[in-house]
Length: 335
Ligand SMILES: C[C@H](O)CC(=O)C(=O)O
Ligand SMILES: [Mn+2]
Image 1 (tube, helix red, strand yellow):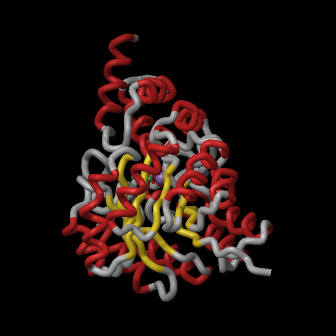
Image 2: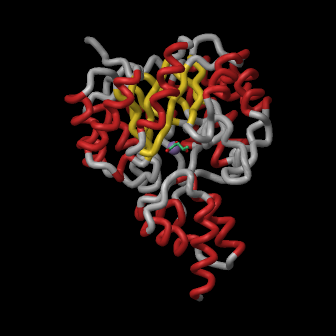
């Protein structure tokens, strides 16, 4: 029987960077990338959590320069492709060049769901230098399925190899995912991918819903390591997809071992859904805001939940991390 191939894109070393305050070391990166490569992951994404060149006062400084991490990982990889994430305005064409020189073969160009036009030049340039290019639409819950298609078309026309929809706030339900992926599937003719956050405990279910509507690239990370309550848990996803008869090409026991033996020991905290991550999903707030919100809550003696509710009301999006402090300050004045 023909089994549909689902490409697994591991984001432990990129989205997971948020969860470890961008603290990955060369040794950890080598062990994780080498392990993931062996177990059959198709693409391994490595960058600061906010993409290449994200290391800054606004987003948090990396302990080790990401180019060093990328180079080290590349030396341990033989079959998976190495990807970088690039948010136009944070990362530049020069950063992309540097990433490629250090071994990146794929770039995922991430923009707010309504701003694909700011990524056109990055997609075109990546194609010109022979890279695989992916159009990555963040905070996709904020856009209607029709708006998502309109934006995806901009990436398609720029030459993207596939379109990735990100539920950056972990806000979507399986119905929300199905509506967006199925319309995309009927509207564009390049592959579709999906990136989940587990704030409502729906990351695996949403990923499966995406696959059911025809998505063939799914993001996941070991132990779910990622912003907010984390991403789709890699080892769980591979087991579920296998049970459902899909082909991931993954060594499932091997993936369990990488998660248990290599990733779990370096996690700062278990990736559980405490109140604040749950609020991210409930209020539709960008998952990467979590640790910044904890810091602001401590500084202004507030409940993180109150800050997140306000951020949700104000519809803050990625890139507005500085507003977290503004909101916390305003709330503290009202107290
Ligand atoms: C820069 C963000 O962390 C990208 C991402 O993973 C998301 O939008 O979700
Ligand atoms: Mn994410």
